[in-house]
Structures are given as C-alpha cells and as structure tokens.
Image 1 (cartoon, rainbow, N blue to C red):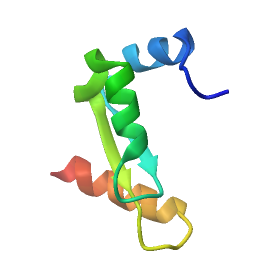
Image 2 (cartoon, one colour; image 1 turned 180 degrees about the vertical axis):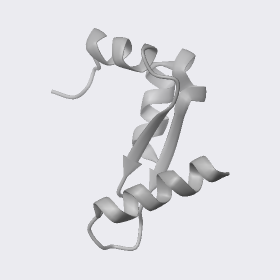
Image 3 (cartoon, one colour; image 1 turned 90 degrees about the vertical axis):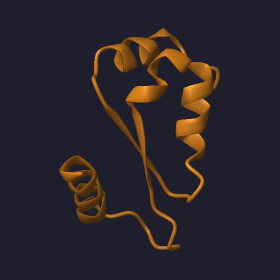
Image 4 (tube, rainbow, N blue to C red; image 1 turned 120 degrees about the horizontal axis):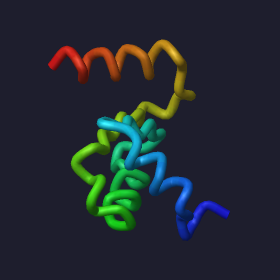
Length: 71
C-alpha cells in the first residue's frame, strides 16, 4: 500500500519548506527512498533517526527537531 507513492505525497512534499522524516533505524531508509522517488524534494527532507532499540517517544522527537532547528 505504501509503495509506489501516489500524487498525494507529491502534493504534500511540494507544499512544505522542510520535512522531518522520523525513522526508527540509524540508516535513514525512508528518507533515502523518498529522495530517490522525489529527487526534486530531496533537499527539503531531514532524517531524524532513532537507533538505540527503544521505542520512539514524543519527547525524543521534539528534542531532536528542536536541536536540528537550533543549528
């Protein structure tokens, strides 16, 4: 159901300046797939990867995004 992507995702990627791709692996596989399928949006994609074996938490996601935005 997820692949191949449809036009809804293309419209979503087009409508945002920056997209954080939250991933529960260290390799950033989804960001890589999105970059290959939608190369014109690759620069907008930022992988936030979690790889310590624990479940993702809203606090961790928020902290990582804030840290990225602060520079």
